[in-house]
Image (cartoon, rainbow, N blue to C red; front, side, top):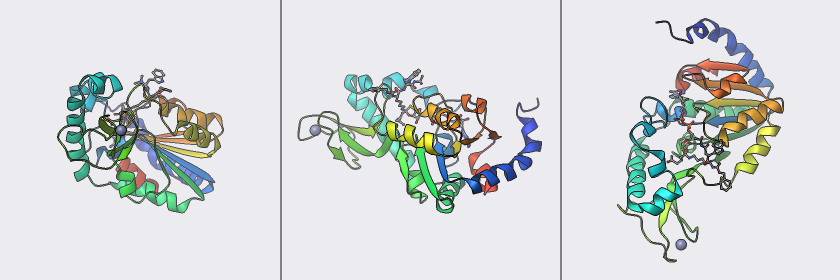
Amino acid sequence: MEHPFGAYKGTKRGKMPTINQKLKEAKFVIVLTGAGVSAESGIPTFRGEDGLWKNFRAEDLATPEAFARNPKFVWEWYQYRRDIIRKAEPNNAHYTIAKIEKLVPKFLLITQNIDNLHTKAGAKNIIELHGNIFRNRCNRCGKNYGEISDPTPPTCQCGGLLRPDVVWFGESIPQIEEAFQKSSECDFVLVVGTSGLVEPAASLPFIAKSSGAFVVEVNLDRTPISEIADESLFGKAGELLSSLM
Ligand code: BJW
Ligand code: ZN
C-alpha cells in the first residue's frame, strides 16, 4: 500500500529552499520538541506502537495521585527510565537544533522532553517545560536534589518524600507563561517530534501562528499541528533536520 504521505516524497526537496529562506530571514526562532526528537537516540516515545503508554498506564505512573498511592512503584519506574536515558546520546536532530541556535539572532528551545539530550548536544537557551528526570525534589517542601540512585524514594529532612522533578498530569507548568509570551513574539517555529496531544504545550505553535509566525513541523506522521503548519515534513527528525541545514 502506498504510504499516506508518499506524495510528500516528491515535494520535500522543493520545500527545503522555502523553509531555509524563512529561517534565514527569521529574527526570533523557537524550536518546540517532543519525544520523537529522542526516538533515534533509543528513548521510547509515549504514544504510538512502541510508546510507553502501550505497556504502562499514565494514570498509574505520571500523576501526583499515583505517587501518593504508591511512591515506590512510581520511583522504580523513573529509575528504570533514568537507566535508559543515562546511556543515550544526542542524535543528528539534537545537534542540528543546537547549530540553529548559533546561527540565528534570537533563539529559544522549548522542550517537553526530560532527558537532557538537548543540553548534552550543546543547546543553551532552553525551557524544559516538563522538567528534568535527573533532578529530584521534595514533594512537601520543594527542596531541590540532584541525581539519586536509591531503589526507593528517600525522605527529605522535612519528612516529605523525594520525587522526580518532572511535570505530571494535572500539575502546573512553572514556565508556561514565559513560553506563551515568547511564542507570541517569535517569527519562526520549528516543531519536532511531538504528537501535539498534551496541553498546554500543544497550544504553543497555534499561538505563534496566530501571531504571524511561519510554522514548520517535522514528524513521522500527521498531527493536529499539521492543520496550521505552513510546511510539514514527514520522516525521521535526524535525517530531515540534517538536510534542512
Ligand atoms: C518522530 C520520530 C522521529 C517518533 N522523528 N518524529 C485541555 C484539554 C484536555 C486536557 C487538558 C487540557 N489542558 C490540560 C489538560 C490535561 C493534561 C493533558 O493535556 N491531557 C491530554 C493528554 C488530554 N495536561 C496536563 O495535565 C498538564 N498540566 C496542566 O494542564 O496543568 C494545568 C494546571 C494549572 C494550574 C494548576 C494545576 C494545573 C501537564 C502535562 C504534563 C505531561 N507530562 C508528561 C510526563 C512527563 C514526565 C515523564 O516523562 O514521565 O510529559 S506525559 C508525556 O506527554 C510527557 C511528554 O512530554 C508529553 C508529550 O508527549 P510527546 O512529546 O508529544 O510524545 P508522544 O509520544 O505523544 O509523540 C511523539 C511524536 O513523535 C509522535 O507524533 C511521533 O509520530 C513522532 N516521532 N519518532 C520525528 N524519529
Ligand atoms: Zn522537604
